[in-house]
Length: 115
Image (tube, rainbow, N blue to C red; front, side):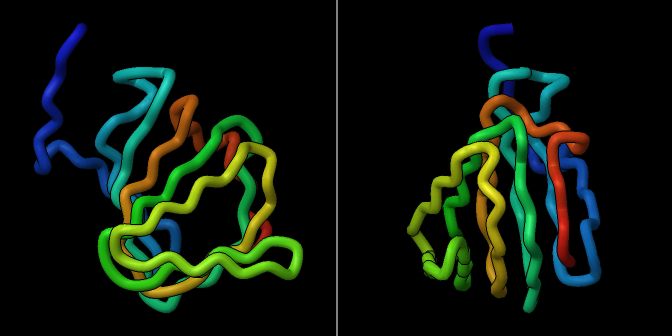
């Protein structure tokens, strides 16, 4: 399939915790090379690592803070944070962001060590 439209109503919400949810739109079932979701956090804090996918957060609203090795990266509306695969990082904040993974996200590749 060369072109596909994915309607808003086709999003598949996934509740990660009381403070974080992700709605999946473009999934590995559609294309194994890339996935896209909308993530929404309210005073969320998490340490995670994706062992297979590079990751991009494009912040739509709010503030996303990513911490790694004593460094803090603060992204607000219109900013992008890029994270290489196999990078363990901490993220926190209240935000709405587009979340892109390449190759496509698979839950078994995500290692959450602190929620």
